[in-house]
Length: 309
Ligand code: ATP
Image (cartoon, rainbow, N blue to C red):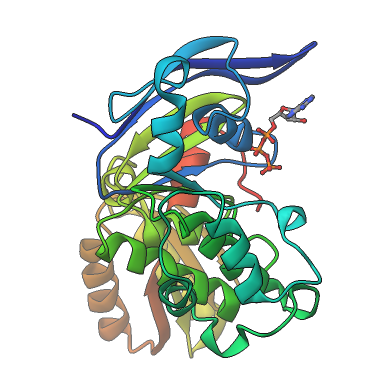
């Protein structure tokens, strides 16, 4: 049985449809990521599941429990990373954790949480003097204080620098190692690809597609971009372009000076063919790459829209 089932969720605010129709299931122990552009409905979806706002339609079951019947039980099973504004700025990191611990009959030890979020050495710092990344780590710790089975993290890395983001990734991966289920939202595709067991791409309040990152990328056409640049300049690149165009697997080409890009449904074969050609002509290749497909390409393929984070 999935640990979370969301069916047909819908939420409107006046004439704005924040969530039109969202359904998914999450298995215990997964890192499940909801990704989508600004305004796609990620936060609204999470807030409905967390019991913070009622859906206009649809059902939510958390390990078989429902908000209508089992709200108290659910509260002890889930952990919500609070908004920064919910923290007490003048209290220290440790005091915030101690205070949040009093909200629950059973809580994890503050020391254990400090170690998990890597803030032990800053335990006596006041919240107001924490960096953005430290604040986010504390927020995750506050969400973990009741030792929940399911943790909800809403855009925990937005606005953080790459190192601070990686620190958060380590915490999320550690939660998984502890057997927790994590439901994450982000608008960083790279993050979703690196962390998630499964990704649910949402756009305009609807699920665009849902699967493991590898399966989503695998569903894309086999057409891949191959790039070559030539030490012998434009002439070599132009000759290679003509040769590539006569190869059946090459769909299109584009060239700028000595740089050639081509899109092939069999990129490896195309490269072997091109190397044969350049060797025969004595052209020297300076750089070669085959661009990996990413979740960004999945989004573009499914929505027909450019991805901007
Ligand atoms: P972001 O990445 O920017 O946080 P999101 O995917 O989390 O976006 P939501 O915050 O769920 O998106 O918002 C979805 C849509 O619903 C947006 O158009 C938003 O303006 C609107 N919306 C959300 N909450 C409210 C509200 N309380 N009142 C009116 N409109 C709302």
